[in-house]
Length: 299
Image (tube, rainbow, N blue to C red):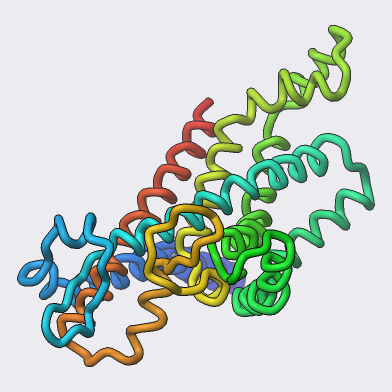
């Protein structure tokens, strides 16, 4: 009888733990749906009543506080976000993929572990600290090196964002490279290929989907960054002509203006509409990366 009581106790414990894990698993989905419903509710009034799609997507004038003619053109904000994120991705891809290749294919033992720890520590640096680096170090450095009047620009924000996106890209790219079966490497080496030839002609093509997912997640990381971009980009509403122009990002606009906006006003709802746009773009990017990763597992 005592044995049956113990067995029943273990059964209840197993059921409780299974229920807890299930709740933990679906909590992320619940939170995402809740966030989407919240920002949609707050911005729905502007979308249904005041949103002019042509003005919103193609007008560079963002003047929500104008007394005579408030305008809500997000084109300059979208262009600023895209330019910073694009430059960050271009800068981070070679360094991230190169670091992942070295860690996965060439580094050995203690060296590999130290490099992985350093990359993880790089990801742990708060975004406001990166913003201070852009403001106090990169700003005068860019002014001196390129002889420009202001160092808070696309180049500054792009470099800072590249350093912030590099750890996640490196980690995912390394996992993709390590997932390539060893028999591929062994077969290529048996045919007389060198280590570099194995890496370039066998491992990288086999891991291309994982590397693409790493890049997409890096783009999503950069697209949603706020504080560092706010501090390093110059925060100027401008459609850029070069990497030395100051711009304003979508996230920075929301962070800078939401606290000074009357709740329920048109300006308030317009900022939440920007949030809906950001949510949609980042969701599509992450969904695409997830579909790419699922394609890897099937293959």
